[in-house]
Image (tube, rainbow, N blue to C red):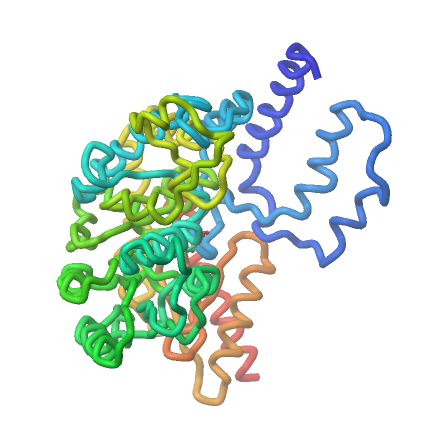
Length: 481
Ligand code: PLP
């Protein structure tokens, strides 16, 4: 493809995306296909000869769209949001067009320095500790996911706890212990596995009625483990748990971690970006105790996947765990120690210029625009929680400080409540106007309404609330018949 052909087809693709965004609200939110349907539309063999680009574009409508669940749909209330936006897509496009590898400073200095700078901006905007800045002992890096961030945090913690011994001898799977709650994201357990620790290393700390980790329970577990000769390595505290957005009390957990010399990692994958709003920042009080922190701009901050913002307070622990300098990567700047090579802050060697899209997003919306985005979703969620709390057909089952509301429909005593709740969910999702997901709280099914798609307005939240009530009434009558 010549640059001129790229220009022509690039314009067509941008038009296609703009048209898609204009009409996404008219499509059924959840893909209606069955397993295998998408593959059945594809030829058995790969193309032997090149095809006109118009054929490729046509297949976006024929093959891809029917098999797509529309996360940018204003009626998308499932999981957590996966925001994207114009400036994010354009930043990614430029990154793809430049096609650079930012593994070392020397392989493309702008890729490293824009990233460091944007991460310092975000550290300030989110009110994170000054130690997280590149100008201090720590620094930030864009990771591919919070799952990846949780893993590198654990590797850094293992390195620090062992005073570097893991690099030479590996981990001691029989001694190292990691502390989570039952509400911690499963990626932390995966990180434990990948790090070579068995699931026996995981200590599940009790939670309180709000599903937040109990500091006293953590202290008791640490005390007992130390007395038995274990080596506590990392405590993973969550700000905004995946199920219900519970908040582990950082201000109380921090001093306990310090007492036992344990690394405090804060997983704020979804909720962390809300700290850009000053009045929401208090929800993360105690963040200054954190040794590392992760939050996903690709969930709720108008930036497309992948854009995980990850910081450490002590970069030496991270690079000590991960840095390797083979001869073919040697260069004068690295040898002089005058630059940061971000490959030493992550698992892969190669890395995309992901900071571009973050830079574009920040410059297009400004911090005030991002605050307005977060504030509007939180306000809509609070409105929904207010309606549901005042309605005898629903219980709001957990605190809802951000933009997720967990609802348990009430059913008559003769009905299996979980079956009825899941039937309600299926009816809503089959309808195509909205999409919700579920979780369990206290072992019982609960509907999660996650407000967060960029196109969602108060009218869409009113609509999901109307659909919840209508479908509840229909099923309640149906079950009674
Ligand atoms: N941690 C928490 C608390 C999450 O809610 C999630 C995803 O929802 C993750 C980690 C994983 O995020 P990612 O998809 O960026 O790996």
